[in-house]
Length: 217
Ligand SMILES: [Fe+2]
Image (tube, rainbow, N blue to C red; front, side, top):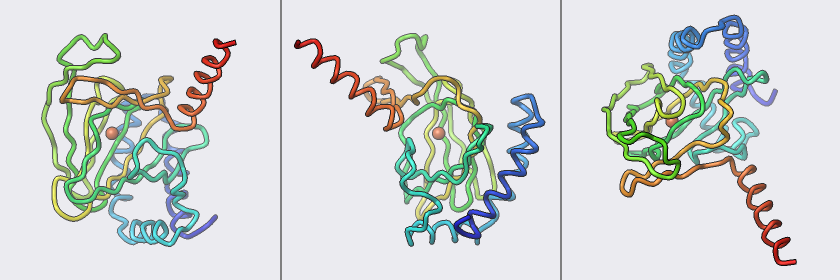
């Protein structure tokens, strides 16, 4: 293993995998991670070590790993896809776009205030390209506090740093559903954008291009 910080994260995650593997029900898995995540969030030396590793170009965390968000770092992926552990760094006032997820999640702050703003569909949700969303409300989490996210329409939100300085958000996501993309919602014009993983998107573009060329024969 590359370094002591990776070993520490991996040791925690392997223990979680063993425990969670024995829990059949999703609610109980949620509850397990809500209980477990605060201890990880309190490990300030670990997060400082991970940040130094990113700056120094260490192999862990691997900044070349493909992620949906450009402030996202994958800390662990369970080989049986039970869960993944991710770190997000938000600068002052930075927030994600409004988006959904393909799995349940538990998120918390390891440093700084973390704001979660929730939305729900005002329409019937049937048009894949359009969405009228209503703001349900927000919570601001202090370091060590956590919040749950549900998959698809039940978990539309944006997360970020409502304050000065930096926020470190740490999230555990469960096994993804079959849908291969997340959705990004534009509140201004009501449009919905499907965001595929870059590798898949490139494959889809190549297929499209090949078909277009074939049609010209
Ligand atoms: Fe999210």
